[in-house]
Amino acid sequence: MEALAYEVDCWQDFADVIAAGIGRVLLYGPPGTGKTYAALHAGTSTAFAERLICTEDLTAGEITGTWMPGREGVFSWREGPAIRAWRGADGSGARLVLDEVDRASGDALATLLAVTDSRESARWRHPETLEWVRPGPNFSVVMTSNIEELDDLPSSLLDRFAVRIRVDRPHSGALSQLSVDLREAARRGSVGPSDRRVSLRSFYAYDELRTLYGANRAARLVFGDNADAVLDALRVGALA
Ligand SMILES: Nc1ncnc2c1ncn2[C@@H]1O[C@H](COP(=O)(O)OP(=O)(O)OP(=O)(O)O)[C@@H](O)[C@H]1O
Ligand SMILES: [Mg+2]
Image (cartoon, rainbow, N blue to C red; front, side):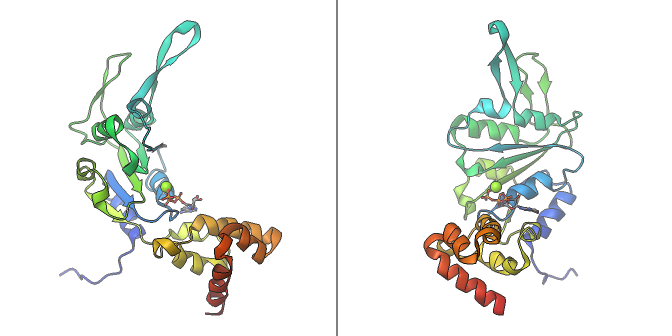
């Protein structure tokens, strides 16, 4: 019988799911842990990835495409990132990364539902050539979000994403960009309770600034009123 006790590592889960060819994955959790980076890079070595950042103002045209005015007032169709990802470089499909997906609403949300539908159901008519376009076999979507609870996403969208991975730690590749003495503090600090969380991006800035201006000034510039607390934590970490 398969052992039930194993260490759950969200990044290993993500790698395994992508390796198994699962084409719809949601990564959610605290900011700055490497979700977008992993979504763009994991399993996409041979294809290019398209990225779409969702906002309240996102329009359907920014997803599937829009008419653009050209010379002498002639309009031509500019294909959007979702359809480009359906096609990929050679028609076989590529990765679509949908960042901050909880912010999409209205028309944009309806379009995202159509774009992320199963391969069998999804199709879109090119308004210029009138050809029917379908997602290529290698089309995949990774959505990212900072939501804490899955209920904060529309259930219709969630339903298309059977694998949802809560990211509860920074990616080791992201930590390795930091000086060695900061890694442990950044690992713990970047996923703690939200009111005490210190983003990995802040540690990156601190790491760069301290080489120029020393630890105290760098901490004040980056961490503001929390500078002393962060420096104390770093000292304790260094002694531990
Ligand atoms: N595997 C990695 N190797 C190198 N750098 C990384 C890696 N993962 C993340 N980073 C770096 O860490 C920073 C944060 O990563 P990313 O933007 O992917 O986080 P995120 O979880 O998507 O954050 P948010 O939720 O705020 O969008 C970026 O500067 C990114 O380049
Ligand atoms: Mg992101």
